[in-house]
Length: 315
Image 1 (tube, rainbow, N blue to C red):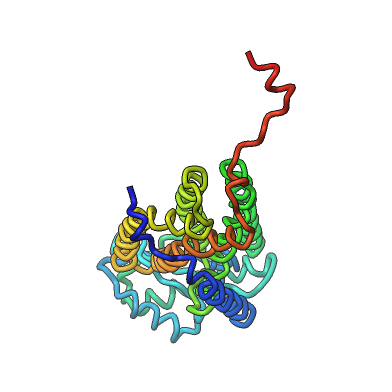
Image 2 (image 1 turned 135 degrees about the vertical axis):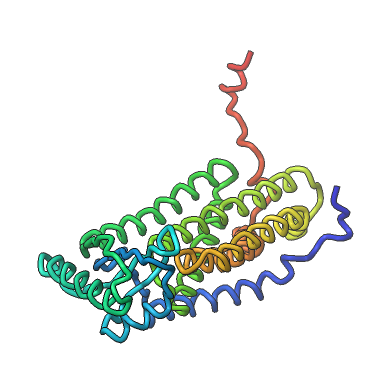
């Protein structure tokens, strides 16, 4: 059992953290409005070309070759093996003309790379991704995040209490906006992997919030004559070790992905690293500070009193 003399006064600094969060959220919104997102081929539409080399190629040299040939918006990654590569190039046309341009773009890419490689490369196929597919994917991603937020609020409200759900959703919005702001500032390619990492951040934040909320609820019910601020401090102190172990082990895995996963997993891993750190901070200060602002009390934790008719009906 926790020694109450060693409780960390987290809530003493809640106003400082609220101000810090407000600054970060406003700065993130400004960054998103000014910079926008660097949407990848998944969302903008374009051409995807696969090439197979006789020996492992130098990806950086291929990128420089494409730059010199006038293909500015492109992405070159290894595909499965060291000798197979995938090239993704954004197109700017629309409708059927874009599909026609896609075929011409693929042909140009193959010609350029074949000439540089002295014929030691084989064309593995190409694909056209229309802008309409990208728009649908973007809409589905936004819808997915909204549905996740709604289900989160319903779950927390049913599992704990409505005030907890408000804190959880504010924490979720806080995490999402700051993570998106980081993506805008860092100019990370916004592809399906990055979208998946944002949804993973939502799930991770929910996990932390549920653990903290459960401990807060139990302490409100069991501790007598203790102020709400002190009760929340006790709950956070009790879950701190578990939180730190979870964060450290998760970050170790993500840093491994960042270092060894290559360019394909770069955006996914770096966004998750930022999201995990922001989510851990939010579970400690945003969700719980909201409970303080909403004046959470022991009465909120008490089960509803049954009506006299319900009591009379009991055997």
